[in-house]
Image 1 (cartoon, rainbow, N blue to C red):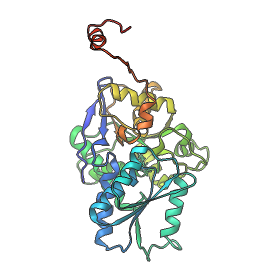
Image 2 (tube, protein in one colour):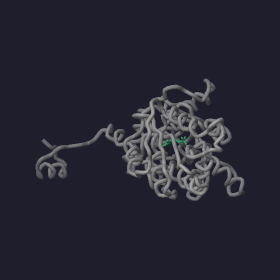
Image 3 (tube, protein in one colour):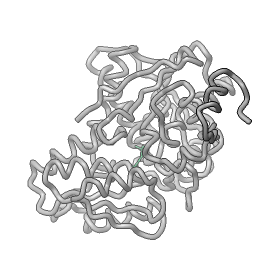
Image 4 (cartoon, rainbow, N blue to C red):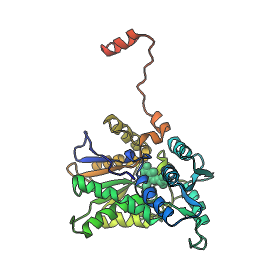
Amino acid sequence: MRGATPLIRLRSHGNAYIKFEGTNPTGSFKDRGGMTIGVSLASSIGVKGGVIVASTGNTAASAAAYSARAGLNCIVVLPKGGVAKGKLGQAILHGGASIVDIPGTFDNALEYVLDTVLINGSADHINYYPLNSINPWRLEGQKTIAYEVFEEVGVPDYVFVPVGNGGNIYAIWKGFRELMEHGMIDHVPKMIGVQASGAAPMVRYWNGAGEAKIENPRTIASAIRIGKPVNWFRAYRAVKYSGGAFIEVSDDEIIRAQAMLGKEGIGGVEPASAASLAGYLKALGEGLIGPSDKAVLIATGHALKDPDALLMGNANMISISSINELRNLVMGNAIA
Ligand code: F0G
């Protein structure tokens, strides 16, 4: 368990706060509900096999770690070639995980898992307990993000969330809604779901352009490279009933937002996480929100998860071979 992640005010936009989920034990928000509650539950019901997840990487890293700690087996099913190196490395590190890769996308991986564990729609025979975000316990854990935001800044006007399967945005909204049901707040923030333009089935549905499904999702933000969000209806409800919106951002906007956070000295976020800042900047630019609105941007996973994306940045690397050259740099003189 962790959570209690920092909420950091942006230097460049004083009413925007980054909820930095990279400080969770395996570096993403998945540790909260997914694995803390899900693995505990799997243990308590005495599953014979262990736990199983389909993943774009973070769920796999988290499931591998928490099930190793619980002494349970873990099978992670991944889209071949579609998982960032840091996440794959974490699944390997927590040695109990069997890593299975399949052809296709995350959507195919989830089909493999669900078809395996649910026979005729029933999970009665369960041997391996599925811990994807169709699992309600996952979402119960993730709603603690809302409690923490509330403790620090009350109810913001907007919460920006990168959307893949749609579980997290729903969980955060549910957390706020329950605070309201308990009389602790009198309204909930508007939830803004941000997707990458090449993987934006929710935006498509929101705009009335068809089902919340696309084939061959594409984006640099591999964590949210998802075409058929399993929690699409939950995510839709969260956005609709909070008065929010779904918006899309390009890969370029994502990469620029990632670099901008880096320059602000905020520990670093992976591309999917930077989508929330990219979405915020876009919403500001288009007048959907105003500069005085208080916004919380959920930075879902740590930059180190995806070293290849980091290395695409403009490195300011200078090779030198003598102390004098470094002295020159420090004195503000050009290096020959
Ligand atoms: N951000 C990151 C860093 C993620 O890893 C994910 C999902 C999301 C955002 C989207 O959250 O699916 O609840 O809408 N990652 C999953 C995984 C799919 O397998 O790690 P969502």
